[in-house]
Length: 204
Image (cartoon, rainbow, N blue to C red; front, top):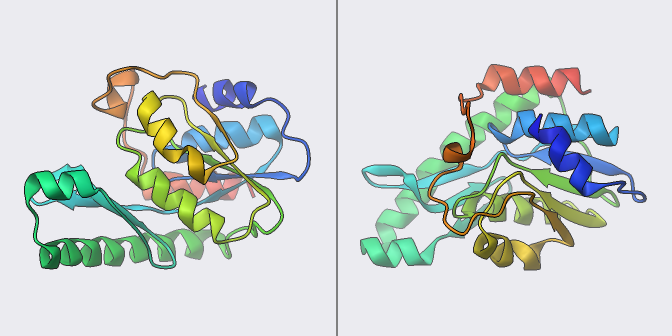
């Protein structure tokens, strides 16, 4: 299991006690494996991708709870997107994100407190890093003592871009060229919201 593999690379966390924060939806199965190996509880940090018009998989940016917005200025410039359109795309992504936040919390109750804890933030892999940067920013606002980024696969330049936002990072596979996370999986079946809730309830 990828989660266990990543957790072994993490090694013992020690104090402060860790809590695993997975980025739904694909990061949740990986995060559950990490949590089991660390003997930690599992929470989620929902993030919404701000997709480009007509190219939803191309990230203009990402949004996270509490008004966190990260924009990919390079993509915005390359596509010549006007500011009012970018604002509209962000607004739509934030509305969709709020529905996910409410669904996850209704099935689990209040999210775990991070103040003074070690937050291990997990996803199934990183391509542009925009979604993870939004997640890390939102996690930092909750006051953890340490933030550790843990993913199975990501390009070195993305890890370098995210380094200022974390205290440590673990990534076993760092390809020089990476177009899509799914290309590094034999089975990249989409995780459903129901499966996310099942993982959360099982790890309570």
